[in-house]
Each structure stands twice: as C-alpha cells, then as structure tokens.
Amino acid sequence: MLKLSGLVIWRLGSRAAVRKYSSPSATVFKTEKLEVSTNIADKVPKEESGEDRGLVAAAFASLTNLDTNPPEDKKKPSPKSVKYSRAQQIDGQIQKAVDLNSLLVVAENPVVSRRHALKMVSILSDWATSNKVKLSDFEKDPRFLKLCRILARSSTVQAMSSLTMAEDLSTVLGITGDDEAARLITNLTLPQMVKVMKALQNKGRRSTPLLRALSHSITSQNEVIDLKKSADLLFSMASLNFPDPVLLDRICNDVIESLPSNKDKPAVVNSITISLGLMKYRHEPALAAIADWMHSNKDIRRASDVASAVVTLATVDYLPPTADGLIQSALSLKEEEMAKSSSWLDLVFSLLTLNQATKSHLESTLRPEFIDKLLSAGEIPIPSRRKLMMIDSYLHLTSPSSPRLPEDISVGVPVMYTKEKAFFVMSIMDTFKSLVSADAFLKKECNSGMGFLYDAEFAVDAKCHPVPLDKAVNNKSVYRIAVLGLDYHDMTRKTIAPLGINQFYSRLLELKGYKVLQIPYTEFNSKDKLVSRVQYIEKRLKDLVSHS
Image (cartoon, rainbow, N blue to C red; front, side, top):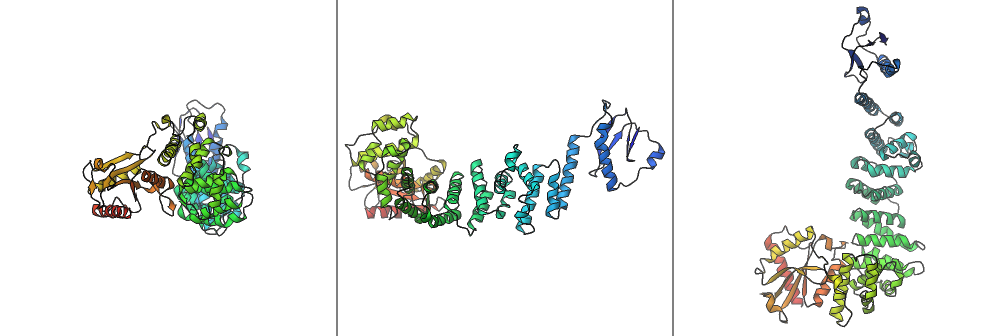
C-alpha cells in the first residue's frame, strides 16, 4: 500500500476509476474495495490548501513512473479530462492578467490552444487601443511571436521567426476570426495595413468586417499613399471585389498627387490603370492624370502601358480632353509590339469602342492569319469571339466591301442574361405590357446577331402609337425602337454612366436603323408603382421620338 501527500491511497491489485471533482486540481482515484485504517482516515484534512493541491497534482503526475509494470486492469486518467483541466487553468490565468507580463507569461505554457492565443491577442489589442500598452512594448516579445505562430498554424518555425512584425500581423489577420482581427487594425501602420490587404488577396479571403476596418483606417491616415501602395491596394480590392468608394476616392486623389514625380516606374502606373478598369471606376481626374503621364513619359512607358490605358478608358467610356497624345500613341502601335494576339484584339476593340479605330486596324483582326494566331493558343474564348463578331458587324455596316469574319467563329457563341439582369429586364417587360400588349407589336429577348442581346423591339409612329412590327419594315415614317436595360453591372462607378461596351451596342443598333431606348437602373426602379414606371417609359419614348 502506498501513501502520497496524506491524500491518495493506492491499493495494488484493486480496480481503479477516475473521478473528477469540481475543483480544477482535485482529481482522486477511487478504488472499488478500499481498505483503510481508521487512523489513516483521521489524518486526511477536511479542506486542502493550495500547496497541498499542488503536491497532489505532482504526485498524480508521477504515479505512472512508480510501477513500470502496472496491473492490466488499472485505469489511467482520461486524456480529455486532463486537457480540460489544463484549459480551465489557462482560462483562469488569462482572466486574472492585469498587465502585459502577467498576460504574456501565459504563453509560456507548453501547450497553448488557438482559442487561447486569439483571446490573448484580442486583449492586447484592447489594451493598445486604450493606451494601456504600446504596440512597441510587445511586438518583438518572443511570447507574442509564439502566439502569432500558433494562429498562423505554421509548421516551419524558422520561417516564421524570420518574418517581420508586420508580416506576422498580416498572417494573423488573414486567418483569424473576422471580428477579433478587425479590432487589431487600428494599431497598425499604413505599410502594415497594405500588407494585411495583400495577405487577404493572396488567400482569396473576402472578409467584409476586416476589409471595412482596413478601408476606414487607411482612409483616416494623414500619410500620402504612394504609387506602389496604391497599386497594391487597388489590385487587392479588384481581386476581392471590394470597390469601397471612400477608399477608392482617397487612393485616386493620392495617385494624382504622386504621378508627376514618378520618372522610373511605369509598372505601378500600369497596375493602377488596369485595376481601375477592372472595378469600372470612372474617376475622371485620375484617368486624365494617367493619360497625361503616359504622354509626357514616352521614354519609359511601354507599349503594354499604352494599351492598358486605352482599354481602361474604353471600359468606362471616358476620353479625357488631353488624351489626344495617348490615342495617337495607341494608333501608332503595331501588332508585333503586343505580347499576345489577344492583347492586340483588345486594343483594337477598345479603340473602336472609343470611336478612334481606323479601318486598317479593324481589318487586321479579321485576317485569316490573325485568326490562326488566336487559334494557335487553343480555342478562342467566348469574349474574344464576341469582340470579333462586333468588329465584323461594324465593318459590314460601315464598309460592306471589307473582308468578313469566318462563319465558324460566330457559330455557337452563347449570349444570355445573368440572373440579376434577367430579373431587371423582366420588370421592364412587365411595364411594357401596359403600353404594347399584343405580341405582334413587341418582340422580346432579341439576338442582334452581332454578339449581344437587346431586350425588346417595337415600333411607333410620330405620335408614339404602336405599329405592328411587320408593317414597320422599310417604313420610313415609323420609328423602330430597340430597348436596352442597364442594370448595376452595366454602369460605371463614381461617375455613373453606361459602360463603353453598352454604348457600343447602341451605336451598332443605330447603324441598323434603330432608335435605342436605354433604361438605366438609376432611373427605373422595379419596386416603384406600375403607374410610375409606365409614365417614365412614356416620357423617355416621347423624348426619343421628338429628338429624332
């Protein structure tokens, strides 16, 4: 029989079971047949001191070493029970921490869970926000870096330990809980916040609370965002589809301020230009500044930089008053200067969208040898095939003798609505039922044959009275109307206007003899009363006919 600390009695050969009492450290073994003398029982104290409980824990920890060959039926303490007890102890230590050292000392435990690490980092964030501690007080502390490594789930300790503090925080913020991580943002510097944004982009994680916190904090900075940081932020925002208008406006204003001093970094300007186009952000002063920079830095800009600027301007349908130099530079580019044949197609189509392309440019994309170059990279993507179809249609309408696109390129090109666009068009068509009721007067979901759909077609006379479609053919006294609904995705941001591609649709339809009735979502609300919607369309229709 063994006696330990006056509390534990072990009888060899008896079956043991673990019982855990309410006290975190009061774990005892109960035997089924416990034979204890009265004298020994009398010596057991009724209330254990903290020191005794520590001795008990130590005694239990050493029990497995007392007998190298324990009986087969002896039960060991449940690992789950021991783990739960340890977790409770760490929770208590965290709750009792009142200063930096008493909190970070908890990180010295051999095993710290992610939950505890996140809890400690959150407390540090609160303390830093309330100026109880400074970030510099703990940012290089090995115990804090250990918490960062735990949250980062890194298996390569050496790699993690070589990271700077900003990169450690970037990793933490990129993978921890959104709300907890957002609370850390206010403690970061501008370069650190940019790194956090890049970390989210690299992981493809669109954490709205975290992105909003970043946007607010970056916008509040007094420091000018340089071109490199602007490029990184804009690319991350475009990749994560987070076009925050306040942050975008701040970045564009700083870009305008920083551009004149940039004499050796065309790549960052190119990146900024592309990202603005991807987000359809029509910040006219920033776009004008980029066009001016391209024209005044001919010695360092590249052909791809000029092409990217033209593509972005065409996307948002904006041609700055001072963009003549940029357009002339784009017109002087040769196909051989583009990295890919698809890049040349994008440039030519963008020039056409801006109504700046020459006939030779357009015909160059329809040549059989150019089509072969596109096919050499594999099957031509649907967007590129639609561009070829529109170039071909424009040439056929303006210069019928021009070469035509091979028919197999346009065969099987799908043109369809997105779910959101279909809902918007449906509300427009429901409104038209009050104006044009019979199917003979209205045709819906019309395939233009030029690579895009237009929503409806009908005809009216000079007094806006409906005319059957079959009687409108070749009748010059009748106006053929093509309807184009423009939902949120068909419009630019900042300065709200139809995208360049939608304006080009209208030009093609006008070349075919239609009057185009554009109905933007900013003016037509499907939730308005039917009477209001009908009145809006009637007014727009009368304005269209009267101007004709």
